[in-house]
Image (cartoon, rainbow, N blue to C red; front, side, top):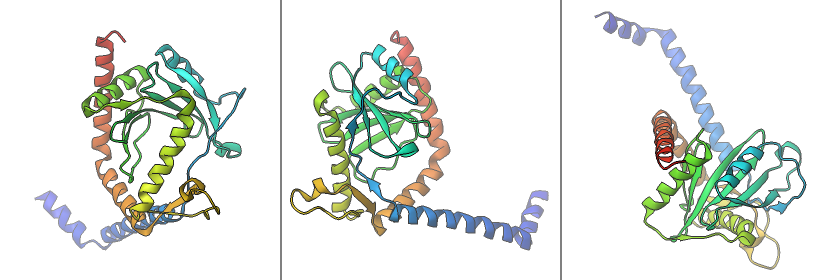
Length: 259
């Protein structure tokens, strides 16, 4: 009865509804900001240039760990941005070329991904941070936060086996070209489906898709992205539990196999 009385009091309390209005208004502002950022933010297809002799700000220990797992470095590259915005990445390939390890060397956005190309043209990605929403349909991404590289590799290989698809190996001298081409293909897929639009003017002559490197979401694309974000927010707790359980299972299976 006391609980019913409390609910009745809250229902009739003007202060309660003021709180609801304020919280609701703040949440609406947050969604509106997210929508406008998605609509106007410039998404760049990052063109990478090899760099030599640079001291890596982070990630050197991950490179060493990957080498112990049989990966070999393809090289370290910069996206050309200046200062703290510069993205420095290292690509590493497994011995058979089937697994590509992408390592971002940044104190602000330290992360890494394991990538395998499937026969249907999609890329299967296992990431060290929360998986990003992909509207192109060309990436199958899951995350395994806080997992060591060994268990992460085991989990990734389990995912690849579950697809029951053939895989396409990467070639060391084409890794960067393939990486940039995949980014272009994703952008083109979203533009052709009405979810994206090019922002930078296309250069005269040549392939228009090759010339364009900057794009943004359309009104429809931004709305869908916000909807996906709302869905992800409602599932965040469950996703965290699933990721933690998957990480623990991957660690256990890896240990059983002598990892």
